[in-house]
Image (cartoon, rainbow, N blue to C red; front, side, top):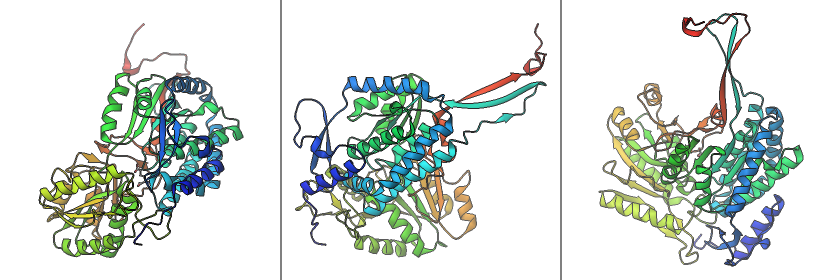
Length: 518
Ligand code: UN1
């Protein structure tokens, strides 16, 4: 469409209020439209138009302190509740999320700008992790170990760790919280959540649903606390020894601030930071499948996933053909109102993201790159405070500095290679290590990519893109991505402490390693 035809601010406010109320939170009429100037506030803004919908009161330092104290007090009791009983809380949360998926998706679109199916997909991810966590609540297994001494039993037990501080980003405003909260709660850890300042409404809705789940299942209300506000709350979580685990998702810059502070008090960190994900396309690739996989991974979510495909490493014999097809697909992508069923690319989170994108494209051109399509802003007259942008496809002569940098916007850089070794070296030749994939029908190439000397990322795929991981696997990456693993598989272990137990049930006292004493 030539114009956006977006609803006005009052209609967007009404939409937010309806969804919030359905979830058991206050509607926006509870908050002033103008900043009252009487204390710190968080502006609830929508990237659809850039309009501020409400000014929410920020959590004060005194309230944050009280929240931490209460979370810690709750931990002392919650840790002794049997894990399957803790699971009942998460089971109820999953039911409530299922009942309110449309409301939550409405808020995700409003705050993060996601198209409907991606917003619903994010809520689906929350429901899935609740299912996973409920099953896990009966499977927090330790091992029995073959000991070396007669009459002794050697085993390990997993115990609740303590309060989990969760710092989340705007782009998955609720799924990443749920990965942490669902697992932490069954593991016996109360959660203190500092959501992105850009997504306070989804946080209020989730908090209300979890409070209801707690009330319905008899869990203490202190199992979850919300801190609305700026970096000061992140700093509090990083510094306070009552927070046993800080699970932080966001930029490398944020990780560099948080990690040393947590390390200084020997706290535990789970970091999920930047990605600069690549796909290698080899001569045997199924091109139809590759084009679809690449376009979703690179342009989906307007390029604002940490798993977004940012680098395409194509065999030189195939590059022109593939690039032409991707450029054609990019030129057709419907950009606009994310609530509209035909839209595939919604707005960027804000105009600053478009500025960063423009600067990156300028830098790419300066380094010899050619922008084949995209980068242009749409609807700027109609929505001057929003950033609707066509995803950009850029041919690069080499993996220059800008290609090795994560710009949180839809830019796909195309590089070419001659040998698979060269392709793998390019894939691994950036500071980030989150996700990667190879498109090939050659088993040797696929297996080599997954091998120890293949992709160095936490996620390595074959014949699918870099984004859109299922919750059942462990999610996270190496190098500047931070090394943490969240979500499925055995990521739960980060939320518990391991105790190794040796029990002597004999009347003798043989010492390990054959030591004689007394
Ligand atoms: C993120 O962008 O922080 O694999 C998380 C994916 C999603 C999660 C992305 N399941 O793309």
